[in-house]
Length: 220
Image 1 (cartoon, helix red, strand yellow):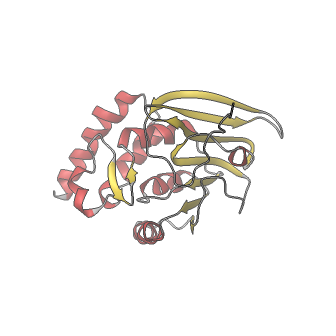
Image 2 (cartoon, one colour):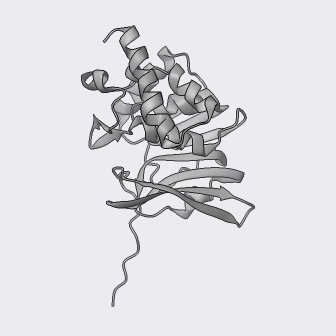
Image 3 (cartoon, rainbow, N blue to C red):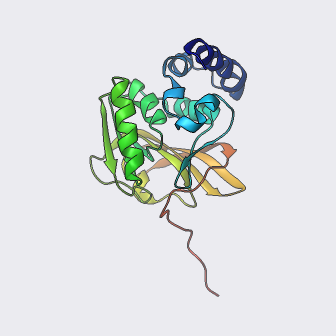
């Protein structure tokens, strides 16, 4: 596909997939139009960059469908002063979206080659307000906390309290919680040192993060 073909496909994706999925924040729509998603998908799938589906990244991981990425960004309500924690760098595309809106992004990835590849892509696009870390963030990430925004880019059977506790007062966390075929996208807000609110936004299905905490099992 030519640059013009990609531009047309991107705009079609925005109109037919993203707007129709209740993503109406013009700031988010402009961001999706501006950041070239095709530069972040694996080369083998570049021609499918704007298709309404998860794309395989390897190692059992996926790049989320475009409408899900856009909706999550909208629901996070990111401000220019926010420090963001992303668990699961993956392709680096979501990292690019977050970094384009926030003051700084700390992104954690358990697969070293994903992190290295994302670093190259993000640098090529002039995004430098990002700290990439290789590690396991499925049960939390203590370094550099607290955060104003936390996004978990994979599903969790249960949400660890340690991730909630890493939020600043007034901070937002979005996680996809549960097991297939019933997973809820939950948004948690920290009200004060001890209080949180929790909203279920919609349902989706996404592969789980590695080493995620499993629900407690009752033994009778």
